[in-house]
Image (cartoon, rainbow, N blue to C red; front, side, top):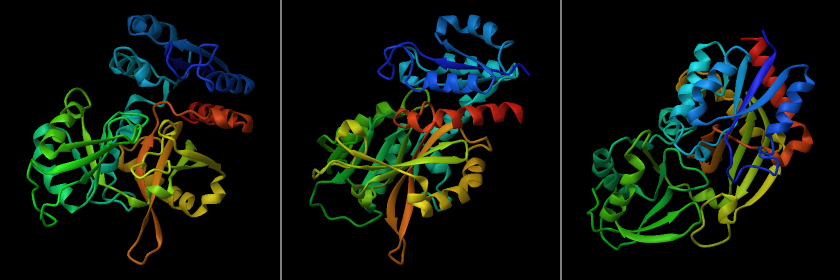
Length: 347
């Protein structure tokens, strides 16, 4: 054991501070060093792939990925190939490409639709034909939310409502000229399109590598806020209650869209925390049998059960590059460092 961990970052991007790093990168590095381990940051570029692999594979026990895929000019394929090669060389991935893809991709919701976490009428479209065949019928059951696979900050997440007075029954296949009201979560802006126009517009989310759309029912209680649990491994660190802006069409819980964030302790949401803890083994099993990511979040929306009691519906898992800068003063970086070192020691 070398007692050494490398942190990967990408150059540039809106997530960087004046020192060129994410605000939480150097605190993690310093916390690892405070445990008596070596740690350094390596910037990844596609053209440096082979050089980076040669430099890293014999010097470090593990890597921590702190790269937002959107900051890689040519996408994540070459980066993920490099991480897989390092894993084959014996490095522990935190998190591995497989964990980032299995947990972070939107179709994780479909894989969990057989559990109580996600409604069973949640679908994934991996090709345009399946989308065109199924969505006109899915929409007849009520408002839907479409989510592109790897978007962030609400981009490519659409609330879809029927804006027509046509007569139809649940289960009918709606005609392509049905008028729709479509609201995008990135900024809550509204567009009016026919069903046919909207589906053609959404084709861009399905084509290409990792292209896919998730289709799930709209949860009206999103207006009460989305509840995000930030996790380090299996430990809940804090809960963010994200309430959408007070406007008629607002349903997005992103800061960019005007949502208000309130940070709570896990014990303030004990019922949710206990439920989530109880299903963690099931989540891991359904999403590939992998270790849970090093730093990740799970977003929930409120719903009612058949008796009118509160229930929680999973809306999304994020794990590619979750930040926690608002809580650095509470020492979360030390928890991250201890968890990372524990994974190396106990591997």
